[in-house]
Image 1 (cartoon, rainbow, N blue to C red):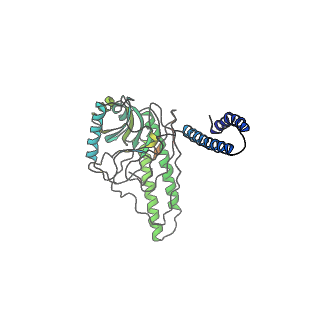
Image 2 (image 1 turned 60 degrees about the vertical axis):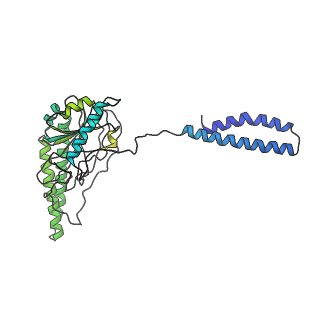
Length: 339
């Protein structure tokens, strides 16, 4: 019942009897005392009713909004320490399984895997997405997140989408380079930046189009026993259970790269020269908010901001396997791609 309706009902119940009683009272002090008492009682009743109605009608809200969970390692963190802590967490989970049975987990591989090698490794678990990058020597290439339920079909389709996007990036860099016709030092440096960015994007496009060995992590959902079996495979470096993750769009996954052995750090990047302060920015597309849609859309690739030194998810897409996460669009890469 709304507050206004409740107050109107209260008036209809109290006011008529009070009016009849007041008409019987004599004039003078007695009437004033009665009026004062009635006013105090009415005011108190109205205040209590309003407070009760406000408390009763307050919306519960979504308790998960605002809570972003980070799973994995950050720059400067020990990778052996992370692997060991993940093993301890899995052991504790096996001793006290979650009430829901299944739980999300971040799986990192010992090497970059091709799409066809993922099926035997991830057998028996539900996959939400895979993370990949082209491992070019001394080059920070962009990390991409590919929603993948059907392995390897969705991964192959996602790689084809990335290849098309990288071809478009390479063409845009070449166009920007060709517009610089001056011979000043700043323009020469800027042309090198654009030319290098075009070369890196073209190399990434070629690699993804050939179904490269580029996948180094996966976000999955499985029972603790399935996670234990998965952790024993030779291709798996660590299985990091994440029972605290309820929605993938409120989680950030940070897996270490296969070539990182001691601590997380940005790799040496000699492919792209430093850009001058006047470098023209590459147009970007603002991210599209995601939702908890449990439909199964066509595979869509999302990527991290290119300046990130470690793998991240901008706002991971939410899904509960076997449904695929909804599509989202993130900023295109700059000449210096992210790790």
